[in-house]
Every structure is written in C-alpha cells, then in structure tokens.
Length: 448
Image 1: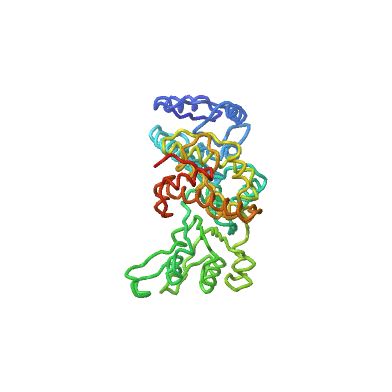
Image 2: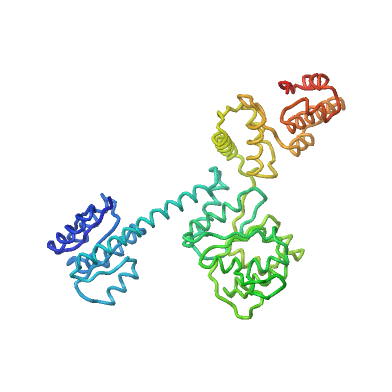
C-alpha cells in the first residue's frame, strides 16, 4: 500500500479527495498547512504529495521546493484553484510530476495518481538497480590511499569533466570508471566501454565515430559509433595510451567541439558524452616519446585519478583475501578453511606485480589445489619464487641448490594439481624416487 499526503487548507476538499483515494486502496494522510506537512515528513515515508498552491500560511510551491530538497526522489502533484499557466510551468520546473486544476474530477485524479505512483515505483526499482550496481563495482579496504581514491571519485561524479584513470594492471581502473558513472547524473543510461588496445588501429576510428554506407569497402550500411551510442551517458575508453596518434587528434576535436563526424560524412553531429579514459602507461614517458599527444592528455585529465598498487595499501590484503575466499567457497559449495598466521604473513611480503587481480588468482588457485585446513601457505606464482630467490638465497652453494630444487618441485607439483605421478613423468624419474625427493624437501603429498 502506497502512502499519499494531501496538503490543502480546505477541509472539505481534503475530505473529498481522501474519499476517492482511499476507495482506490491508498493510505492517505492529511495536512492543512506547510508546517503540518513538514511535521508528518519527520515521522512518515510518503510516496506521493498532492499540494495545493495556496495554503494560506505559505505557498505550495515553497513547500514543493522544500520537499525536493529533503526528498529528491519524491513525487508531487500540484493542485490550484486557478487556471494559471505560469504557476503550472513553475511547478513543473521545480520538479512536480503534474499540475491539476480545481475542481479536480474523480477520473482525472485517479489517472494522475495512478501514473504518478507508477513513476514512483519505476524510480524505486531504478534506484535499487543502481544500488546493486554500486555494490558490484566497489573497492574492498579502508586504507588511506583507497579512501583518497573514493574522495576523488565522489568529487569527479558531481561534475561533467573528462576523467583520466591511471594505474598498474589489476588495480581496478574499470571499477573507478563504473563508480564515476553510477554516482553521476548520467547513471540512468548505461555506460559504454571500448578497449582501444583490443581493436586494430584501422578499425578503431569507425568504432569510435561510426560510418555511412559506402564509406569504405565492407560498409554495407550506416553504423553509429560508440560516441553516438553513448549520447547523454558516459564512455569508458580503456588503454587510451595505445591509440594511434593520428586518431588521438580526431578524438581531441570531438572532446573540444562536442561533435562527431562519421566516416564518409561531412556534417558533424552533436553528442553529449562524458569521457572516462584509463591507461596503465607512464604518462610522462608516453608524451616524451610522442606516443601520447600532450594536448589530449590535458583535455582528458580534467580530473586525474591515480590508483595505488596493492603493495602501497597492503593493509587491505587481509580483507581482500577474506572476500575472495568467501566468494570462491560459496560459488563452489565448499567449506571455507582457516588460515595459519604464517600463510598471511608470507602473503603480505609478496610484491604483487599483478595487484588485486593477482591476489584473487593466488587465493583461488590455493583453494583449488590445497585441501589442508588450516592453509599454511598460499601458492605464489613463479615470479614470486624468483623474487624470493633474488632476495633470500644467500649461503653455501649446496644450500642454495637445495632451496632452488625445493621451490622448483613445489611449483611444478602445484602445476600438476598436486599429482606426483604426473610430475614424475615430466621429470623422467620413477614415481618412488620422486616421493623420496618430495619427502627430503618437506613437500610430501598424498599419492595420486
């Protein structure tokens, strides 16, 4: 049951409207003044407001402004006893859903209320969808670098400037792009995405700007580019640093003029697109070597969001590990194992060149290949083992060789899913000899 608040200083009119609305199954509240309406708002959730323009103590339009400020998503219908076009237009400008003239016929009232409440329901569904999307595209952690990123995202979402996201692979650049879009006023339209590195340079221009039939061989029909498709929304251009320099000049012109010319056309078409670009390249080096136009960089970097690598927010690693473990175990119907303190301690010292994406792969791989509980060691990638060798293999040659053999056996055994027989075949040794080698190096596994 949806709640309607009637605000009118004429008691008989309120009674008449209430009778109709309650007869249609609505819950109806009444207020004779703007002050009474505000008091009700502190205690009740209202789906629809029916506001008289002339309340005696205050204009209904002033109350409408107050409601819009307090409840931006609220739906209001303004009612007036005079056929006043300027008042109606002002009510709509402020944010009223509709304007009704007194006396209001029952049929007209019912139709307007039904449509207004349907709009409220659609708005609620859309808000729930937005909330779900924001939950999907969120960062895990509470470190100072991450809090700063969220602060800049919030600022960026409130304006209509281009955004440039920089950071290493796996740091979450696409998450930032989605959050900037979903927190902006453009969120009602889907954000479009284009990976500039995944499309050959010869085709990228047509993907961006579109083409007309006959513009080139194979152009058998007109086609819109992503700029036209993203009109009044956001366009995420990933790996912008890999775009051809000649095409960068055309992109710059679109950003400056707000117009797109399809291939094969001479007349530009206006577009309203908020560009969010991302790159994992070093900007200064790209500009110095002529692979990124400096004027395009300054145009894109109206707001620049630099994502910290995972090694600079290591305090978030335990939270990320817990999240990845929980998700993997729920998805695969497994009981979540506990962690030995040494496992987390060693993981915290890993450099994570692949950042959060690498951490997720490490957790999933460990849970897949290890059945132990608690988990005593995460299965780090080969480059992690090499990093350990460079950092810690110091001592007599015999000890260095032994440690290298242990690490090699561990990595290759993991690569074979923990199956010694398969590893024995790879090494060309009898499986019994391999069992002996594994035992000598503290890598005993169940036969398989």
